[in-house]
Length: 209
Image (cartoon, rainbow, N blue to C red):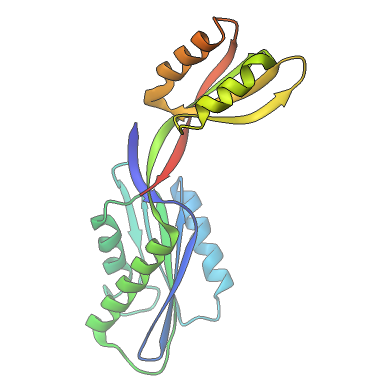
C-alpha cells in the first residue's frame, strides 16, 4: 500500500552562485521531533555558516509544514524551499540549506532561486522514493524447504530477513502488505502446511523511484 512520497536517505549537495556556497542537506524524518533534531544537528555542525535555512514537512498528507529564513530577508529562502518541496508531493523529511556568504548580494529573487535550486539538488542526492506499508511474516520450517524458499525469493516479491538456524530455520518473510496473503499461501503450499507462522507485523519500506 502506497502511503506517501519522501526521500530515501540522507543526501547532500553543493551549489555555488556569485561566490556564495549553498550546501543542501536532506533527511527522511518520521516525526516533527525527528525533523527538528536533524535541523539542530546541522546548525550545530555548521555553526560558522552565515545562515542555516530549514524547511520541514511531516504527515502523510503534508499536514505539518514549517520553515525559517534564519536571518535572510523574509520570504526569500525558507518559504520558497517549502513550496518547492510541497509541490513535488514529498513529506516526512527535513531540508536544511547552509549558506556561506561570498560577498555579493543576490537580491530577493536571486536568493529565492538559489535556495530553491540548492534544496532541489539536496533532494536529488537523497533520492526520491515511495514509502509503502510492508508486512513481516515470521515463521519456522524444516531445513528441507530453505533452498526452495530462497529460490522463490529471487524474483523480488519477498525477502528473507534475520534467519536463525537451530533444529529448524526461523526467518522473516518481508513483502509489501498487499502481497501478504499471497506470500502466506505460498509458504503453506510449499511446506504442505508444515511451516509454523509465529507472528506478523507491519512496517514501512522505501521503494526508490
